[in-house]
Image (cartoon, rainbow, N blue to C red; front, side):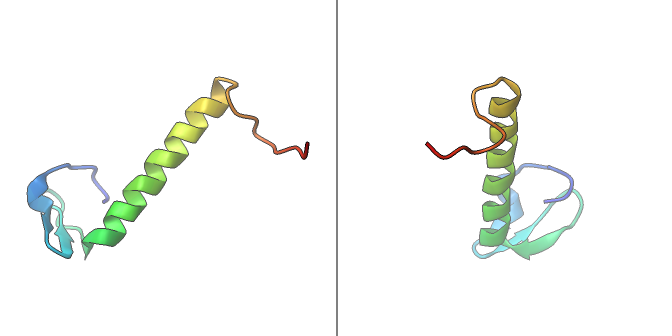
Length: 59
């Protein structure tokens, strides 16, 4: 999704078409990309708060 417009009308079975900007793609791919973006955002927030280390160490 390019414009971040959220609507249930954007998805029609396997296809996704944004009502606002007209972006089209596979609906499952768009869903997977949204999950990835939310995960990256959440991880960034946790790292900035010091809850996660930015680098991994072996114990």
